[in-house]
Length: 232
Image 1 (cartoon, rainbow, N blue to C red):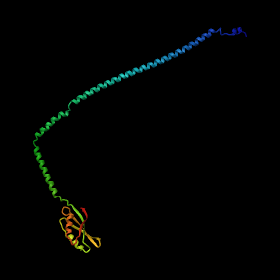
Image 2: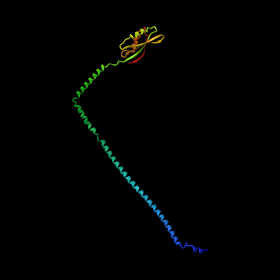
Image 3: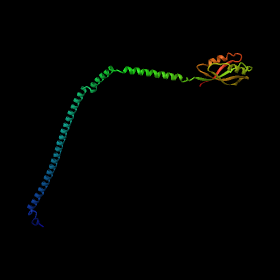
Image 4: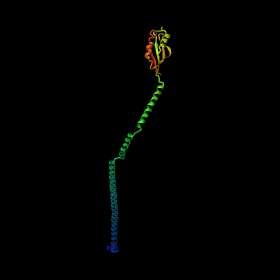
């Protein structure tokens, strides 16, 4: 096929206008979509900027409200401080009324007409009660302190008459002395000692007195010891 025949069969050159129109529409559509995107982005940015401005205005209003509240609190605190200062300077009511009451009490003391008689009667009643208490105490029997004493009386040797020794010991008499039971206790080498109990009044008889009186029987008594001493 020759080139002339090929060009005769090719229709592109005859439809060039239609292709050019299609190409123009394609680029117009492309340009139109880009403009739409830019418009959309610009509208979104404008909306965000408007929201930020709205929030800033809201914060400014809240800030103004807080400033007003703080100013009100300062004013109230200032008034309260003034009132406290005034109250501190004002004297208490009790101080004003205490003086007249004291004067009335002094006046009552000066006008006491029957105070002396009442004091005398009270004094007499007091003396009477003291006398009655003293009399009642005198009638009450006094408690007598007593003690129980156990004595060890040792003879000279095994030939000492122990019956005579006990007789000599019991012969010791004194006001407030009462002899009790006795027994013979072996000491060693056939020697026995006399162990005898007694009850004494502490104010009248002591151990020193008993030892002194018993050791006077020198023929029978070698020594006297206190084996036990108990308060009753």
